[in-house]
Each structure stands twice: as C-alpha cells, then as structure tokens.
Image (cartoon, rainbow over all chains, first blue to last red; front, side, top):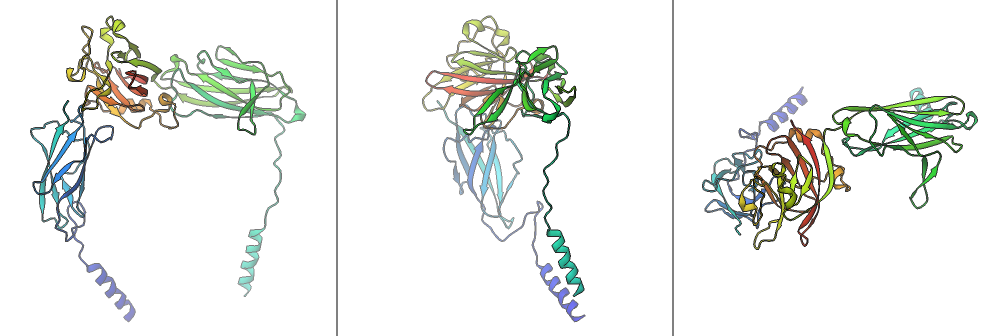
Length: 129
Length: 320
C-alpha cells in the first residue's frame, strides 16, 4: 500500500509541471526575442524569384527584396525564418498576392513568450531594364 | 524439467529443413502475360506486353500466337516474331521463331516456323486516336501442335483523352497553336490569326533575365519586345511556369513522372499570368487557352541561346 502511494505521489509531481500552450497548440516559452532571421520568396515553379538576398532590418521591421524582371507578383510563396519559438501572424497557407506594391504586405512576428509582437513590412522591388 | 524438454523438442522440430523438390511442370500448354509500359495510355504511343507461352517437349511445339485487341491498333502495331535472351555483355539478342506478325482487323498473329517449346513474345500496341477516352482489352492466345489452345486476358486499360506531340522546333518569333498542336512561322501565322495562342521569343536584354519566353499575343506589350504580331492575333492565354516536371512521355529522360488527364482536370489556372519568361531547358509551362477549351503542358526539351531557338513537346487535354 505504501508503495502504491509513493508511485502515485511521483506521478502527481511529474504531471503537475506547467507547460502552457497557445491557441495554436504551440508551446509558450520564456523567450522574448522577436525577429525575422531569413526571408525567401518562391514563384509558382518553387524557384526563388529574388535577385539577391533579402535585406532584413530588424529595427525598422522591414524586409526589402528585389525580384527578377517579369516575376508574377500575384502568385508567390513567401517563406519566413524566425527566431526560436516565435511564430508568424497571419499564417502562410499558400500563394500570396504581392502585386499591390503601394500597399506592402505585413506580417507580425510573435515572440516565444507571446508577449512581444513586431510587424514586418515586405517591400518588393521589381528588377528594371 | 519436463517442460524444458518439450520446448527443446519443439525447437528441434521447428528448425528441421524441408527437402527441396524440383517443381513438376504442368503437362499442358501454359501462358502468362505482363504489361511492361507504365503511365497513362496516350494515343500515338504504345502499350507494350510480354506474352510467355510454353509446353513440355513431349507434348509437341507451339504453332501460333495471336493477340486480339478490343479496338484495332493503329499502324505499327505488331507482335514480335523473335525470342530474346540477354548475352554476357547485357545486350538483348533476338532469335527468330516465326514469320513477322500479320495484322488483320483486331487480330495480330505470328505463325511459328521453328520448333519452339517455350517463348516470350513482345506485343506493341500502337494506341489509335479513336480509342481516346475508351477502354481497351486484350486477349492473348497460343496454339500448340497437339491441338491445345490457351488464352490470357489483359485489361481493361483506359485510354487517356490527351493528345501528344513531340519535338516541335521553334525559333524566335514563331507562333504556337494549341488547337492545332503546331508551330507556325510569321508567314503562316498571318493566315491563322484565330489559332495563335502563344508567341515564342528569345531576347538577350542587359541587366535582366528574359531569355526564352512564351507570351500571349494579346498580353502585355512589355513582354513582347520588338515582336511583330499579325493583325488580329490578340488571344490572352494563361501560362504558369513549372520546374522539375519532366514528364516521361515528353522528356524521355530517367524520371518516372507522368502527366495524366486528372492533372489537367484539377489544374487551377484562374489567376495565372499571360506570359512566362526566362524559361530553361527541362522547364515547362501549363497552358489554358483563352476560350477555355484546351489545357496543355509544354515541355522544353532543348533551349539554344545562340540560335535563339528551342525544341518543345506538348501534351494537350480538351476541357469542353
């Protein structure tokens, strides 16, 4: 009997540890870092449309990317690489229309502790002749 | 203790090897068949089978083999009259066993001229245009000198609705018609303006990558630099670039990828642009014609910058 009680006590202790998750079922951690570390932009053929690496300004929260002449801006797949435990809002679920160059798309990075939010603007420049 | 002895005894029994016995062949004419081609069955291409037949030496020899197709094969359909073996260098060497096959209506027949007890003959069925969208079945049969006959049914195989055309050469300024599955030069194009779906062009423009391009004649003039269009050529064709889709029928490379009818049916082209520039060899484009009648996949077999030309192959599917 004493043994069973002991085992139950151990089980209770191991279960009681708090692992909070957010509305997406993702672990909320203690990390407060909140930035984009890399950015990629793919065309419908899943090949990059960038002419060079995207310039990410983590202070101004902008991503400057120059794309090839003739890129179909209506059908692009953006790919964000974020700091550990961070997540992106809105989520990228498929092709994104970047054709309205005057109103750049915005994406918010949310830190691992879900307390810091930074909104990045994706500024696209099309390579000119 | 007694339990352990029983277990040990069981183990000994279980490990005892069975004596191998050479299987006894059936004392009759037998046959078997496999389909060798993979992927969708497209009109103009073939379906290849290997038909094997054999009987014991004491029973006689094979006198004939034939195939009946539910839809007669197109010209070029034949049943091999050679039996092949692979020699030490890996080369298939054919031994003639009968007369060349004869096609008569739906039948393809080989009469044997050599004493043969066992043979595998290849059958190449060239898919006829009239079989598109239908199913075709095959009955393989063989007869032996002792009066026995065997048969083997294969199929049904659905024949794709797609059309295919291979290796069309295009040069800068040529026009492509999806309806005709043909390439027209500027002179011919002037008389067929209602059929011109795409312009092929090659441009080498400093600072940008334009290269080989397929552009709608009615699209943005920006992507048709210095192109002279025939009056009335103004179709806006939807074009979507693809990479790594080297269809086996079109590319004839080592990749076992096949575009089937379903791919065309499920394709989403509503927001596709009307141009594709900077195309490379082994790339491709999905196409939807302006009237929505056809969808096609154009594969670039070869792109030659110096000659400003390319070689393309096309699969086309009629939607309406």
